[in-house]
Length: 424
Image 1 (tube, rainbow, N blue to C red):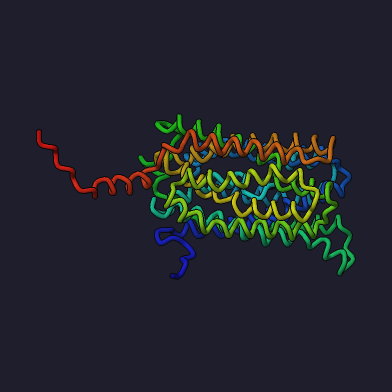
Image 2: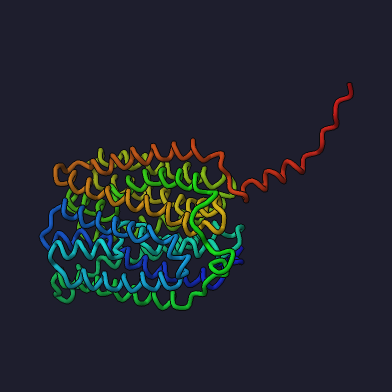
């Protein structure tokens, strides 16, 4: 059976968003690895690296806070174009600045992504647009394609992080200018993404009586999801890819080239796992798919700090990456499924903002802990918190099923033969 590149009901907007997502993921893939190396080369310590990483996440949260409201006024196309221009400005700022405070300001207002997933202002804008770009039947499959594009191109981007080392060996370019060139490439990627966003068509739901609106009847469940997702995001911030790279640099003296190779494979395994997300969700449901794949990956994290061998640590990180990302498209699809269509933009924003705020606190703590001790306290703490999140998610939401999961069971019940009443 031939695998379709896009679901059958996906429209042109879905294709353009996913192409742009792939471009941005390429840049995010190498920036998340080069960021700590670049900051260390500029003379910053582990805590300052943590502060810079936190600023990128907190700034993204501040921007996404307004997404549910600006889509009402401006739609999706113009905010995405503005975000792409901001991405270009961010890359040029990091390439041209070397002082801590100006760089911190650019990190806060810009779009740098220090993690393996997308935590920028693009995410809620693209999510709400994708939810309107395919039928409910194909929604989860579309989100899988979206996440798959991010993981595959993020893997390719991770390999690009080795270019400064390669340029130093082959051409004799000093590491610092080579890394600055990669940030210029990041800026160019933002402009290339804008070319796709310019061709977007505003969906009909953003106009007239069906226009998106702030949360109404789904407010309670969205607030519960946002608070719980924040726990996962905070623990993820403790081990944002830039922080994890920093820990590997300090603990195992890992080179940038070796880190690029490692995170190429972690992203590739994450992408491969996406193919199992849709059939698994169709079989056991979205919530169980999130929990039953994410929990083993959390246990891998708990084991990592206690392992003295780099080989075993790499094995655990690879195993974790094979399991940890199947919850991303299923979570996005679940949020869009349990709210009304007009609330989707606000729901995407209000579940993304607390996640970004919570994840922004994590690197501050991790940078401080790594400054005090070489032990992987951030990794251990992240594993424990993620395990708690998985169990709480199962307990709180396993009974809240989206309509497409309820219909098959109702059909099964209606197909059962009627039991005749017993005669007295």
